[in-house]
Image (cartoon, rainbow, N blue to C red; front, top):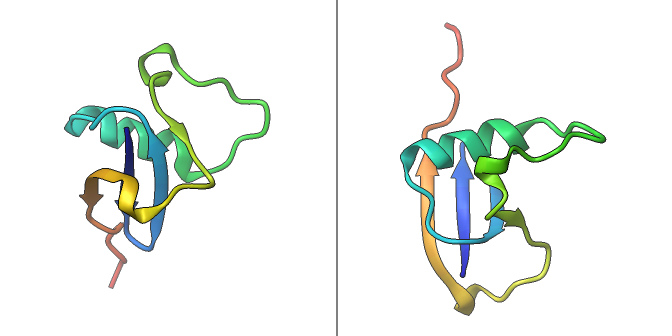
Length: 71
């Protein structure tokens, strides 16, 4: 399965099943800041970022609110 995970202005094209709310949040935290050499936690191993997909193949989408700015 291919889906899109959106967080604010960022989006990730993802291979894997539709994540539940907690898994979506964990994926965003894991991928939001690139960490060279970091390993994927076992609970998130069923998803991976994909770089080449066709939008016709998207089967799911999850959106999360953008981080709030201080005013």
